[in-house]
Image 1 (cartoon, rainbow, N blue to C red):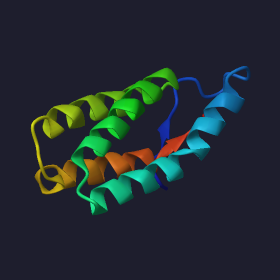
Image 2 (image 1 turned 90 degrees about the vertical axis):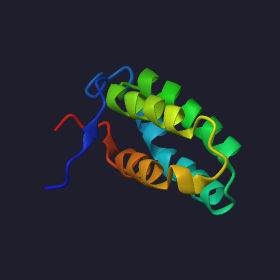
Image 3 (image 1 turned 30 degrees about the vertical axis):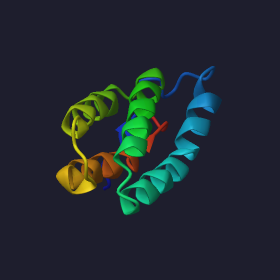
Length: 103
């Protein structure tokens, strides 16, 4: 059984369409992360992680918000992706586990 990171808003019928839309956009965000990693674009990665930090919080994923916050701290004053590659890989792996399914 694959572990999933379930939104705290899962099961809220009023919020379900928005939550599903957000989750459906995660692969595209991961693709942007991959491109920024390949280009060693630390500033772009900082912006992406910052945006995801806020969005994950708003969509009921506080653990991912906390992880993004910690990743931001790791990325502070770094000039190369090599300095936070493993932390970014862990964050991306957890983004892939997001779900709106309360079961």
